[in-house]
Length: 305
Image (tube, rainbow, N blue to C red; front, side):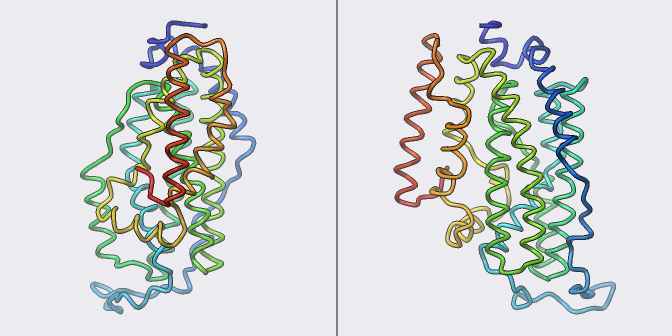
């Protein structure tokens, strides 16, 4: 074991320094694998027209939206989630530090996530998929409330961000498929590709943490995984949007289990790690119990917590 478990679990400076070479290597990998894209090229501007108000255009009415309820709810929740980027930025900087490759990654990640908000809002407004007044009020309410992370430490942040990117990738891809609009499907596929690369970054760093201190890393997984919720849960009308998303097959307990949790546990080999101390064994048992519980929950198709 490379260092005291409490140090790496609580996110001490030693943990940050120990994982820094892995962060730097994966930052370079990300820069090599990603490609530049432009939100304005994915928005169907020709469908847009002036709204009422200063432009004297046409007021918004619900029947103007052609998106199915599930896709509309998913895109709305997606843009509201992205609107909270200032909160995520500060949370990650506090967890990972404000210098070196950790900081470089957080800044790059924030810039790339910002593209998603630009594209999503542009699509929703030009296609008149949502009430623009309600959307703006939601945005202000979202930013005013902010977002608070329920855990402390480097490892907890790595576990959460890995799961969050994994789940968001799946939800975005499914929303595009559910939209019935090739333009929306293409845009959501592009955004999901970003989320996939972000997930790979966090997963690789978490893998390195598991190799360096498996007891602490497994404990972090066991702490975060059972109560995992996407950051959009703080959005206004989240319950209604979630109901539509589940009913439309965009995201559900079954999808959460089969497309996120099961591959997360399998790819990181969480239940096969040996040579553990008692706390590591206990963490493995907690993870296994939760996976089994989620499997049973998914069979009843009850939304995850």
